[in-house]
Amino acid sequence: MFLGSALFQGQLPIDLISLYSLCRVIDDLIDEAENEHEARYWLTQCKSIMDARINSEHVYRQPKGEKYETLFDSIDTLPLSRLSKEPLYDLLKGFEMDLVFNSEKGTLPIETERDLDRYSAYVAEDSGKEMGMAAQCVNIAQDIRRDAAIGRVYIPTTWLDEVGLLLGDVIRFPNAPVIYELQD
Image 1 (cartoon, rainbow, N blue to C red):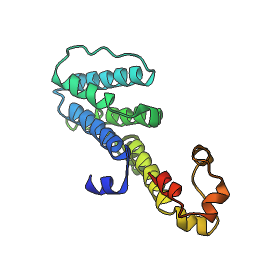
Image 2 (cartoon, rainbow, N blue to C red; image 1 turned 90 degrees about the horizontal axis):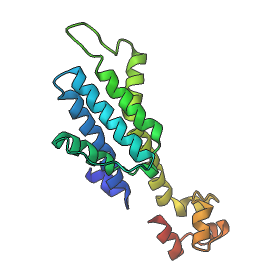
Image 3 (cartoon, helix red, strand yellow; image 1 turned 180 degrees about the vertical axis):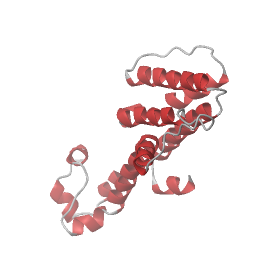
């Protein structure tokens, strides 16, 4: 996490930690469930809380114990306004695949490389995609001057408008103090 904090600035490291925390909480609830029924209960609870939060509905905290509180808190801290919803639900599909594992019955959800790819996409797509996008934004911020020197500007024009700059200003004056402010 220290490397992530060094690379990502502002709210982003906290958002990434929140996302990772949710993944860990769900994984623990599924892995530590006494049986499949309990594991499915936690997936249902997770989906219900996420549905309510995504739809901006108030979720009443019902006293359901420490595990529920931990799950609720991990979802409550997610920056849902800045996350794509589909990968969050795909994450739950990945955890549902975990429930198919039953070594006693010989049922395994991952028989082929394609199954492994699908599982990996479900459980890693959201965090991987968001981290990749964040890394690209950091790269863009670090390369503003280098890109300007070759006539490229990746800063959204809406951001430039907010600080009274034109695209050409960035190219002509890449070392202006206001450009440094945009990096934050």
